[in-house]
Image (cartoon, rainbow, N blue to C red):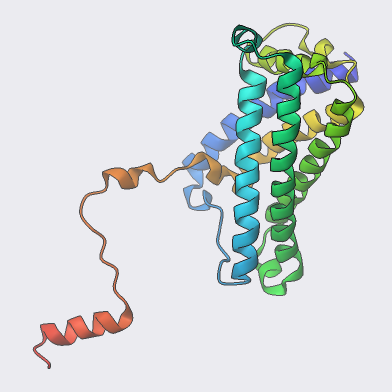
Length: 239
Protein backbone atom coordinates (compact mmCIF):
# COMPACT_ATOMS: atom_id res chain seq x y z
CA UNK A 1 0.00 0.00 0.00
CA UNK A 2 1.58 3.29 -1.11
CA UNK A 3 1.40 6.68 0.61
CA UNK A 4 -1.29 7.96 -1.76
CA UNK A 5 -3.53 5.01 -0.91
CA UNK A 6 -3.00 5.56 2.82
CA UNK A 7 -3.69 9.31 2.70
CA UNK A 8 -6.67 9.32 0.34
CA UNK A 9 -8.04 5.80 0.60
CA UNK A 10 -7.64 4.93 4.29
CA UNK A 11 -7.09 8.18 6.20
CA UNK A 12 -10.54 9.63 5.27
CA UNK A 13 -12.27 6.74 7.05
CA UNK A 14 -10.02 7.02 10.09
CA UNK A 15 -10.75 10.76 10.35
CA UNK A 16 -14.52 10.34 9.93
CA UNK A 17 -14.66 7.46 12.43
CA UNK A 18 -12.76 9.43 15.08
CA UNK A 19 -14.93 12.48 14.36
CA UNK A 20 -18.20 10.60 14.90
CA UNK A 21 -17.19 8.28 17.74
CA UNK A 22 -15.11 10.92 19.52
CA UNK A 23 -17.91 13.49 19.39
CA UNK A 24 -20.48 11.01 20.75
CA UNK A 25 -18.19 9.87 23.56
CA UNK A 26 -17.29 13.43 24.55
CA UNK A 27 -20.92 14.52 24.59
CA UNK A 28 -21.84 11.48 26.69
CA UNK A 29 -18.98 11.69 29.19
CA UNK A 30 -17.90 15.35 29.24
CA UNK A 31 -20.93 17.49 28.56
CA UNK A 32 -19.57 20.29 30.74
CA UNK A 33 -16.69 20.70 28.28
CA UNK A 34 -19.10 20.82 25.31
CA UNK A 35 -18.76 24.55 24.80
CA UNK A 36 -16.54 27.10 23.13
CA UNK A 37 -15.62 28.95 26.31
CA UNK A 38 -15.87 32.69 26.69
CA UNK A 39 -13.38 35.49 27.26
CA UNK A 40 -15.58 38.29 25.96
CA UNK A 41 -14.78 40.63 28.85
CA UNK A 42 -11.22 40.96 27.53
CA UNK A 43 -10.51 42.84 24.28
CA UNK A 44 -14.20 42.78 23.48
CA UNK A 45 -13.99 44.86 20.28
CA UNK A 46 -11.27 42.68 18.81
CA UNK A 47 -13.25 39.57 19.77
CA UNK A 48 -16.43 40.83 18.09
CA UNK A 49 -14.66 41.92 14.91
CA UNK A 50 -12.65 38.72 14.63
CA UNK A 51 -15.56 36.48 15.53
CA UNK A 52 -17.96 38.04 13.01
CA UNK A 53 -15.43 37.89 10.16
CA UNK A 54 -14.36 34.36 11.06
CA UNK A 55 -17.85 32.90 11.43
CA UNK A 56 -19.26 34.54 8.29
CA UNK A 57 -16.29 33.25 6.33
CA UNK A 58 -16.17 29.75 7.78
CA UNK A 59 -19.93 29.16 7.42
CA UNK A 60 -19.77 30.26 3.78
CA UNK A 61 -16.77 28.01 3.14
CA UNK A 62 -18.37 25.04 4.89
CA UNK A 63 -21.62 25.46 2.99
CA UNK A 64 -19.80 25.88 -0.30
CA UNK A 65 -17.65 22.80 0.24
CA UNK A 66 -20.60 20.72 1.40
CA UNK A 67 -22.78 21.62 -1.58
CA UNK A 68 -19.95 21.79 -4.11
CA UNK A 69 -18.31 18.48 -3.22
CA UNK A 70 -21.25 16.29 -2.21
CA UNK A 71 -23.87 17.34 -4.77
CA UNK A 72 -23.91 14.65 -7.50
CA UNK A 73 -22.29 15.87 -10.71
CA UNK A 74 -25.37 14.96 -12.74
CA UNK A 75 -27.38 17.56 -10.79
CA UNK A 76 -25.18 20.38 -12.11
CA UNK A 77 -25.28 18.84 -15.58
CA UNK A 78 -29.08 18.64 -15.44
CA UNK A 79 -29.26 22.28 -14.41
CA UNK A 80 -27.02 23.23 -17.29
CA UNK A 81 -24.20 24.53 -15.10
CA UNK A 82 -20.87 24.11 -16.95
CA UNK A 83 -18.03 22.66 -14.89
CA UNK A 84 -15.86 25.65 -15.72
CA UNK A 85 -18.51 28.11 -14.54
CA UNK A 86 -18.89 26.20 -11.26
CA UNK A 87 -15.14 26.31 -10.76
CA UNK A 88 -14.99 30.08 -11.35
CA UNK A 89 -17.86 30.60 -8.91
CA UNK A 90 -16.13 28.43 -6.33
CA UNK A 91 -12.88 30.37 -6.76
CA UNK A 92 -14.58 33.77 -6.44
CA UNK A 93 -16.91 32.96 -3.54
CA UNK A 94 -14.39 30.75 -1.79
CA UNK A 95 -11.62 33.31 -2.19
CA UNK A 96 -13.69 36.13 -0.69
CA UNK A 97 -14.98 33.96 2.16
CA UNK A 98 -11.47 32.65 2.76
CA UNK A 99 -10.03 36.15 3.07
CA UNK A 100 -12.76 37.18 5.52
CA UNK A 101 -12.25 34.04 7.55
CA UNK A 102 -8.47 34.40 7.54
CA UNK A 103 -8.66 38.05 8.66
CA UNK A 104 -11.05 37.16 11.48
CA UNK A 105 -9.03 34.13 12.51
CA UNK A 106 -5.80 36.12 12.67
CA UNK A 107 -7.51 38.69 14.90
CA UNK A 108 -8.68 35.92 17.21
CA UNK A 109 -5.26 34.23 17.20
CA UNK A 110 -3.47 37.52 17.88
CA UNK A 111 -5.84 38.15 20.79
CA UNK A 112 -5.11 34.75 22.33
CA UNK A 113 -1.37 34.90 21.84
CA UNK A 114 -0.57 38.48 22.80
CA UNK A 115 -2.93 39.23 25.66
CA UNK A 116 -1.33 37.62 28.77
CA UNK A 117 -4.68 37.22 30.54
CA UNK A 118 -6.34 35.46 27.60
CA UNK A 119 -3.22 33.41 26.91
CA UNK A 120 -3.23 32.19 30.51
CA UNK A 121 -6.83 30.95 30.27
CA UNK A 122 -6.38 29.39 26.81
CA UNK A 123 -5.69 25.69 26.52
CA UNK A 124 -3.20 24.16 24.11
CA UNK A 125 -6.06 22.91 21.92
CA UNK A 126 -7.61 26.43 21.78
CA UNK A 127 -4.47 27.83 20.18
CA UNK A 128 -3.53 24.73 18.17
CA UNK A 129 -6.89 24.48 16.40
CA UNK A 130 -6.76 28.16 15.44
CA UNK A 131 -3.29 27.67 14.01
CA UNK A 132 -4.45 24.61 12.04
CA UNK A 133 -7.44 26.52 10.70
CA UNK A 134 -5.25 29.43 9.61
CA UNK A 135 -2.89 27.02 7.83
CA UNK A 136 -5.84 25.34 6.14
CA UNK A 137 -7.26 28.68 5.01
CA UNK A 138 -3.86 29.69 3.66
CA UNK A 139 -3.61 26.43 1.71
CA UNK A 140 -7.13 26.91 0.39
CA UNK A 141 -6.34 30.42 -0.84
CA UNK A 142 -3.08 29.14 -2.34
CA UNK A 143 -5.06 26.69 -4.51
CA UNK A 144 -6.82 29.56 -6.33
CA UNK A 145 -3.88 30.60 -8.55
CA UNK A 146 -3.31 26.93 -9.39
CA UNK A 147 -7.00 26.49 -10.26
CA UNK A 148 -6.87 29.64 -12.39
CA UNK A 149 -4.36 27.86 -14.64
CA UNK A 150 -7.02 25.40 -15.83
CA UNK A 151 -10.58 26.67 -15.84
CA UNK A 152 -12.15 23.66 -17.51
CA UNK A 153 -13.33 22.25 -14.18
CA UNK A 154 -11.61 18.90 -14.79
CA UNK A 155 -9.78 18.73 -11.44
CA UNK A 156 -12.84 20.07 -9.60
CA UNK A 157 -14.79 17.07 -10.89
CA UNK A 158 -12.02 14.82 -9.55
CA UNK A 159 -12.46 16.22 -6.05
CA UNK A 160 -16.24 15.84 -6.27
CA UNK A 161 -15.87 12.24 -7.41
CA UNK A 162 -13.36 11.51 -4.65
CA UNK A 163 -15.46 13.09 -1.86
CA UNK A 164 -18.62 11.33 -2.98
CA UNK A 165 -16.66 8.10 -3.38
CA UNK A 166 -15.58 8.28 0.26
CA UNK A 167 -19.19 8.34 1.47
CA UNK A 168 -20.35 5.68 -0.98
CA UNK A 169 -17.38 3.39 -0.21
CA UNK A 170 -16.30 3.42 -3.84
CA UNK A 171 -13.22 1.24 -4.38
CA UNK A 172 -10.05 2.81 -5.71
CA UNK A 173 -10.92 6.36 -4.61
CA UNK A 174 -7.28 7.18 -3.87
CA UNK A 175 -6.38 6.92 -7.53
CA UNK A 176 -8.89 9.62 -8.45
CA UNK A 177 -6.71 12.34 -6.89
CA UNK A 178 -3.35 10.64 -7.41
CA UNK A 179 -2.17 13.12 -10.06
CA UNK A 180 -3.56 16.41 -8.72
CA UNK A 181 -1.29 19.30 -7.72
CA UNK A 182 0.51 18.83 -4.36
CA UNK A 183 -1.12 21.98 -2.93
CA UNK A 184 -4.54 20.33 -3.32
CA UNK A 185 -3.28 17.17 -1.66
CA UNK A 186 -1.94 19.15 1.29
CA UNK A 187 -5.28 20.95 1.57
CA UNK A 188 -7.17 17.65 1.62
CA UNK A 189 -4.87 16.01 4.17
CA UNK A 190 -4.96 18.97 6.56
CA UNK A 191 -8.73 19.17 6.19
CA UNK A 192 -9.05 15.51 7.20
CA UNK A 193 -6.67 16.13 10.10
CA UNK A 194 -8.93 18.91 11.37
CA UNK A 195 -11.84 16.45 11.26
CA UNK A 196 -9.67 13.98 13.19
CA UNK A 197 -8.93 16.39 16.06
CA UNK A 198 -12.39 18.01 15.96
CA UNK A 199 -13.86 16.08 18.94
CA UNK A 200 -10.97 17.12 21.19
CA UNK A 201 -11.26 20.87 20.61
CA UNK A 202 -13.70 23.73 21.15
CA UNK A 203 -15.00 23.16 17.61
CA UNK A 204 -17.53 20.68 19.01
CA UNK A 205 -19.81 23.63 19.80
CA UNK A 206 -20.54 23.73 16.05
CA UNK A 207 -22.62 20.57 16.52
CA UNK A 208 -24.85 22.19 19.11
CA UNK A 209 -27.75 24.55 18.59
CA UNK A 210 -29.95 25.92 21.41
CA UNK A 211 -33.13 24.63 19.76
CA UNK A 212 -34.52 23.53 23.13
CA UNK A 213 -35.19 27.18 23.95
CA UNK A 214 -37.98 27.11 21.35
CA UNK A 215 -39.92 24.70 23.58
CA UNK A 216 -38.97 26.33 26.85
CA UNK A 217 -41.86 26.74 29.31
CA UNK A 218 -42.35 29.94 31.22
CA UNK A 219 -40.39 33.16 31.20
CA UNK A 220 -36.96 33.90 32.52
CA UNK A 221 -36.95 37.15 34.49
CA UNK A 222 -33.74 39.14 34.43
CA UNK A 223 -33.44 42.25 36.59
CA UNK A 224 -30.63 44.62 37.33
CA UNK A 225 -29.26 44.77 40.86
CA UNK A 226 -30.97 48.11 41.43
CA UNK A 227 -34.26 46.79 40.15
CA UNK A 228 -33.98 43.70 42.33
CA UNK A 229 -33.34 45.78 45.47
CA UNK A 230 -36.28 48.03 44.64
CA UNK A 231 -38.59 45.06 44.15
CA UNK A 232 -37.45 43.55 47.46
CA UNK A 233 -38.11 46.79 49.41
CA UNK A 234 -41.49 47.20 47.74
CA UNK A 235 -42.43 43.67 48.76
CA UNK A 236 -41.55 44.56 52.37
CA UNK A 237 -43.67 47.69 52.26
CA UNK A 238 -40.74 50.07 52.37
CA UNK A 239 -41.42 53.33 50.56
